[in-house]
Length: 87
Image (cartoon, rainbow, N blue to C red; front, top):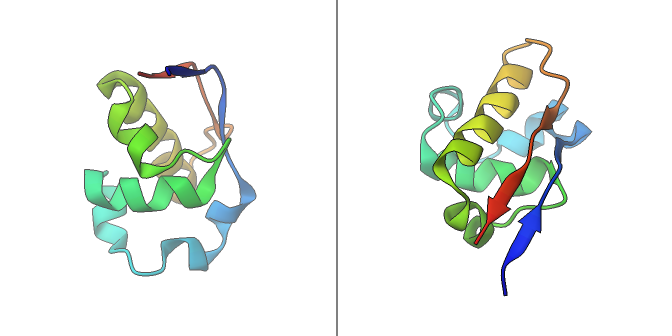
């Protein structure tokens, strides 16, 4: 069935270098989709797996990636993203 997620949080795990293991930091900061599909399940609450991320609307996915990247870049994003719908 369809699962609607109304609130996503970037968890404190993103502050740990281990959350970036196996990833190119440049790919993450450039929001390359494959890198984000690997990073976001490690640092989101509720945990968004790759299948759910791939079904997410593009605008929601881009917004979520932006929040994570802004946090990693040291900008205060609040660690939160708005509504995200997976279909």
